[in-house]
Amino acid sequence: MKISTEIDSAAMVIGEEKTIEYLAKAGFDAWDFSMFRMCEYDWKTKKLLPSSHPLAGENYLAFARKLKQIGLDNGIVCNQSHAPFPTACKEIQSYFKRAIECTAEAGGEICIIHPDNDKSAEENAEIYNELLPFAKQCKVKIATENMWNWDDDKNQASFAACCDPKDFLAHINAVNDDYLVACLDIGHAEMKGLNTNSVEMIKALGNHLQALHIHDNDKWHDSHQIPFSMDIDFVPIVKALKEIGYSGYFTLEADQFLSGCTENDIYDKIKEMARVAKKLADMYEE
Image (spheres, rainbow, N blue to C red):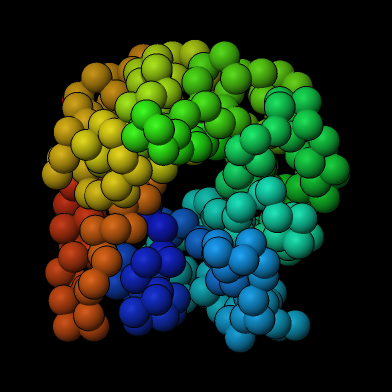
């Protein structure tokens, strides 16, 4: 079982290039190509802001190629990517093909594209079906992901696209194509109010499950912390993954673990992330 992690949280401190070098040095097998800065989204105004990031410019493919080569030079590959979000923003949807194209250029096999939280399986299928011909041309699978909304009155998560086994499978079946697969976000599946858990989701998704976002929380909030630091029990989760024959990567999305890091301490944090990811991989192998 190989291990990977997202690069965005570290890249905000040291840049994507050095992040990939550090991941390789720390013992990761792969890197998850975060593309959130392909377009800057203002959550208050719900509008896009100008972005000076290379992924937003004309030479975005050259940047993806550069990152791929840095990875190869250091002995690691891009296993998957994450397109910009939220999908509810129509302008962001216009960047999805660019995200798929960059994934292919970097050598990734899967691009995670969030469903629109508040749309039905049939409505989200329209978005995915429009992208699938291009994704097939690029030989990149699209993965949809289990989402959540927040109920302020109940102070807990509430229903959103793919948040439980029934709706997740409804999304997969509405498209019914091998190029649309499932990415299970472990932390999201464990949030209070969604009335499910990771084990239930894993067993329901079966061979549709081809990507993971692994992180820990208090089984209430979306904390995105490092595994084994909070309340999620990973033993039955890894066992369930083994039972279904999961053959993808163990990819961390513990971005908040790196929150507040500086250039001086970020490598030590990345090493700790690699250690816990390897612990999960060893649990799977055992």
